[in-house]
Length: 341
Image (cartoon, rainbow, N blue to C red; front, top):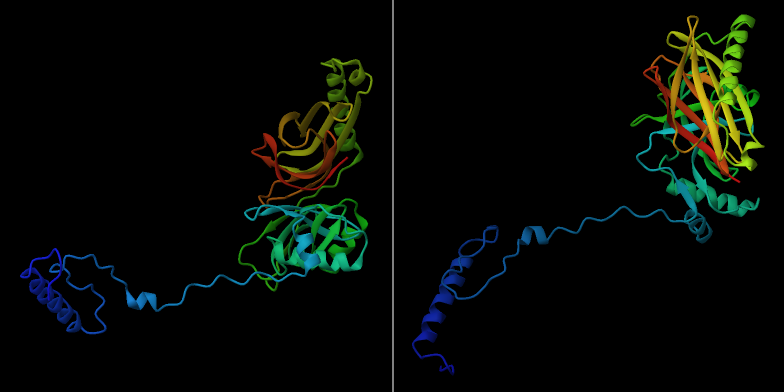
């Protein structure tokens, strides 16, 4: 046989080399996964691992199937980040619920839309049904399972399986604020609870001491810097709040806020009050500018009380849980139930 452009002697040599390589492959056996020796062939061979090729591709978990209406609503649900472990709980409609995010669609009191919302929330929530949240409030701490989802004033909330005594407390206290910590790996059957050991009761003398400290701070703020614009200067108001708790060596906390307009101008001062004196705290809550103390609670379980508060900012507000860090500052641990005007 003659191939144009290739000498006659080259063709037999190539044929012999190719035959030797094929014979070498056949002698290896079907279970040998090493590639053939192609050094004698002037060609490029792509080796395929037949054992790996035989394995089926890994299949992704099937997506949650939603009805068309639930799928539409799911696109308007804004949940907290999946890495978030701290949430704010509060009494709403005489029950304690946990804020998980924002609902950007009007359900219009339509039962079909509401059922679709619950289906969408169950499929998309980073805190699924059956998750365990550790609630810490003025009563102590309690582990509670997530039992479902609801919509409250534009917020996505988780409903909880709670004992009757805590249900009664939530029904009679408005607002009752607690921290909610996601407990990794916990199951709803492994419930644990503990009562608070802090005595937060006060008497007339102690209340008078807190009120006196608040009045002194308010007078100091009013004597200081005032709004530069006449519109704001004419609308300056004050808000004073006091609470009793177990803040280490201190037993009380006072918050005094001067504000004008729609919280466009704010001067706030928060003090720890003990039997021996007062101490000013730094408040680190970048979202909100003004606060009203509601009650004390050990929100992070470190044995020292923290604070639940209402909070405001221009054109909005919400609830916050502020952690007392090192006895020097209040920093936000959780927030929720935000609203905009």
